Image (cartoon, rainbow, N blue to C red; front, side, top):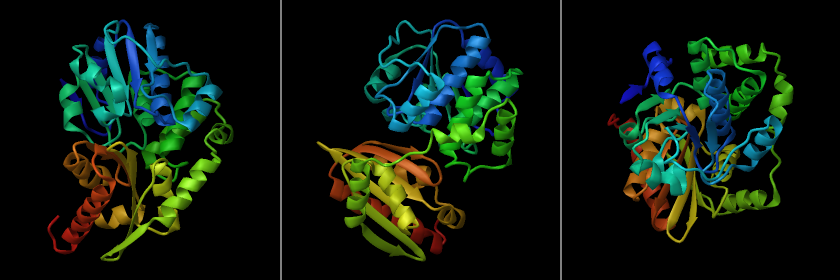
Length: 341
């Protein structure tokens, strides 16, 4: 297995990709794929087509998010919801930090003997790493699209107009409209814009108006919110059956330093965690690694994500889950003041 956890795509890794990416390629995104996942898969599909390997398909296990569907329509991204792993020569996964994000395809992927490439910007996840033939993770990148652009540059290939549009949209989406990122992120954006792309036009597709059900979910989450003061930080938790990510962001907007919103049906729990950049900067508590991973494993599931944004898929009772999550969050923060971390 070839592993790469550094900040740039290495020449050795590029050679490994060139050798492996041949034949019929299946490009796979996580369930309810967001714009970064879909746009990175599309840009990679365009890349391998330019390298004279046109046989590839983008698979969306569990479909795409509402905003992703708008992006797909705008750019003209074609995808499939069913495909044969047996007929593929190589499986490539985009923006997929945990195997549970593959929905019903998880078992098929795990049992498949096909070469597997994972390209991602979440914290590394041991089961994915063990499964991979090539494992490319760059936590410093704001998005998987940023990593795909690195691959283009390493190969000396200039992206075509549509692939460049896709990568710009993916970076914009995962960087929260460029509120996150470093010098390298903005250099990449500058290079994409130099290809004649209109930033204003591409960002317009990401402008989202909440529908009535999401508005109600946010208001209910706020109504059910429990507040916990730990040291100088305000922690909020709530429960709602859907839109957990949107609700967690809403609680941050209301003033929480860290928020966790969970919900589910028939024993399945889905949770989203968010924190402010100030919280991460001062505590160095990484939501994906230090919170989501621990809670997910304790409740027979998985958790992964970024420093200020993470998700959990697991099983159990939601109330017990929230109580235990509060305890873990408190322990992480109090451990800092006692010098235990």
